[in-house]
Image 1 (cartoon, one colour):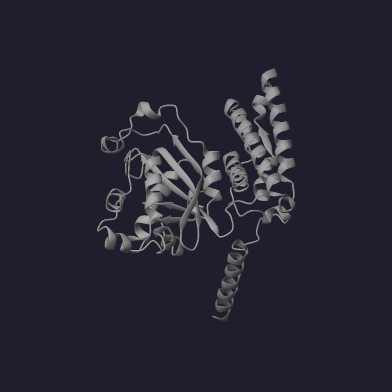
Image 2 (cartoon, one colour):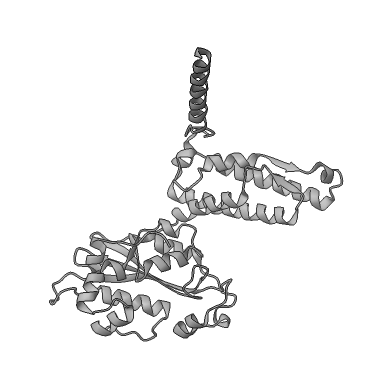
Length: 341
């Protein structure tokens, strides 16, 4: 009996040891300065480790053509360039250097993906994904884009609106507008519109009849168009907060254009100010708000004019006198956006 008890205790201790070992947060980490970089998912150093091994199927190597040998040389050259960039001490780089490094890495990863797609007989190390590396490099690039900066006492607010193929989870944006506005606090008055963007995008799904009745856009209107992601990223990452009248919906739609739309500081003007709209207007739709407050809407359900109308409405006084703080000031004081999709 004593032997059985001792065996059970030994087994329990062994199980605890194995569990702790497998759950060790430092397991597999690479210790260098670049691992502490910009908080963009997988660390730069973890991804760079995957760039070091290329496996070529031996059965194909012996009969490799001159063209295939040229592809091998191109891959070797790209791997060398990528490894040189990834081996940098990212913490010591300036914002401009990080921006340039991210841009170069995206270009190299794109070239590598193209070559690999053309040459099916190349295999990377199984733990490595070129697409993941490109996504990480893209975030490094985007997070270090040159930005707009507000004057003292002001903040930058991005007003966003999209028109889409529909309202379901599979639907996509077909137009997007962004207004980057400089707002003077604490009153919440508009100083100027710093930048504006309006773009179209060809979707991968059909535009529903219901959506087309609302915005009037057909597939031919957006065929061949793509969003200018760089322009969008620069504006959105310059903003202290991103405002949309149905932010939960627009945030989901922007995932089709941006890698990290969820990471932006969102505020929903419809829900954050719902009590104010209910009291002042009786409804919360942008149509009802603009009608009740005398804000012109020259082209309803056009993403750009909807952004302009929302900005005008938010910058109006929330009280009965001109000295009252604007709706924008109230929104920025307690910004909120629902989580999830």
